[in-house]
Length: 231
Image 1: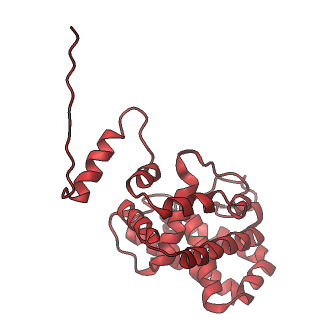
Image 2: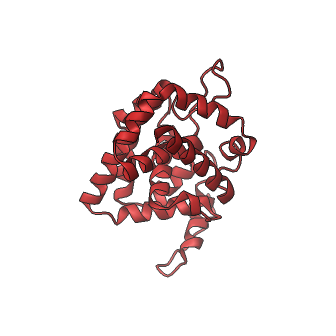
Image 3: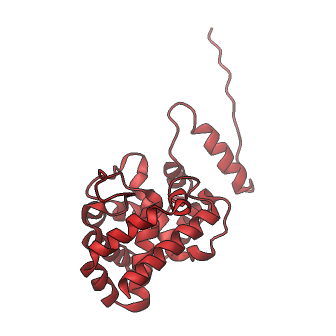
């Protein structure tokens, strides 16, 4: 007769969410662990998952990143989520010490959107991706330290900073500044190469990118660059 021991954990309706998250993470990080975005997807069901899926699979995003971001492990959906998170909360005043909680909370906020709100943000994201492609070509959202450097992979931290800066500029000043950025694309690229020489900015998009100080610094410098170039 074969015997086996089972461990059963009962999660009641009144169990604190933090405990539920901890249990779920422990169960799903053995073997092949789920990525952070896969965990968010599983723990925060609702319309947000569909919106992230649609935007991540959009032609506009694919073109903007030169078809180089894989949907494997929902890496593309996390990029979209980070963009929306920092459009909903001012990155210049960001102080959340738990970046994962910040993104998970954003998914909950998106779940509460009505269709009109969802469509509005979707349209903005598509327009931002199109503008990014026009300004940077196939070099959008990538670190570049020299004009002669080979093209690097897309950086999530640069993606959120650059995309949010472009969207914010369009929102505050209308379409003309974006057309100026497109017309001055060579200058914008040169400015970004110069910005990457700033060690603090380089660290802010390379190490501990969820740290509040790094978040505020990279967004401030990127927004300043875009405003100056589009002014």
